[in-house]
Image: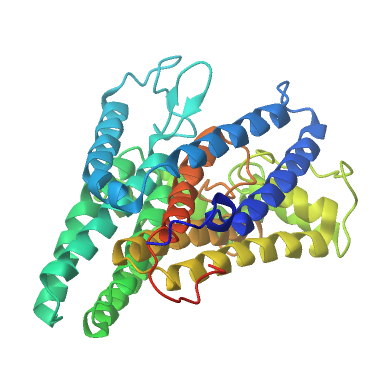
Length: 396
């Protein structure tokens, strides 16, 4: 055990610096978004407050070691399920604690803040999956197709409960995040490609079939499969937004106009002219694209790439399999959020209401992401405590 390493040696200064850059970009974007005067509230100090809360969460999580999170994983998973069930049965009428927003019952409205439980459940879910996979490999050191099928069965059982509760809200975007996390951990777990490829092909076939049915068998999806009309409307407005310019396609058209009008260098800070709904939350990237153009938008994307690269580098150097799977899940969660959020603003993907991590305004999103990065900070910090001999990990 190397007990001589100082706090400065063990703390992840690179990750902290990345977070500071995200905070600056977020504050500038939100300040610009509010020049339209749509909201009376000033969200900049609120976002700074949520960043402070996130920093406190990360600091608190660094106190615990990865082994302690491994022991707490099922308790946290159970807590997350309990809160999701509580949300489902909570009163959902107008003005009540779980009043639906955008046709989805996904929030607790607590007066001082709106809390979305599924944001916290993502991290709890990652911990549970990492616990399952690491324990499974301990009991089955020799991998076979049989052990891989057993592992997949365990993983899908753990996925089924939160996925069903979140789909019940309904929240398709968050459900897709859970599927992305699951896929990443399955790949990181080393499940045979003889199993992964047929499952992936089946998933693509099912997705393609649902898309075809959304276009040509709408009544069947609504009546037999319990789809909501607003979910299908998002598909139509994605494929042909100008035919729905006054309804579901308005968000996308506004976003495309904003980003396109920014051209190469943008219009400058607080000089955006296109009014985009929810531009301080889900469509914050539209503001960045209009005010800072292709150059500014590319810088933001590169910063996310640098974050993912840094997390991947940390993952590859982890000695504990549990930590490896946790980091793999966190990378998948952030990557999917970024890809989906930016993709929906440029018509690459349908609009799902997923925020841009660390940049979009939102307390639940910030606290949920802080929980995830708190695990990374903890693993980096305590990893240096248990190192023997001469290692090349001093620059971890």
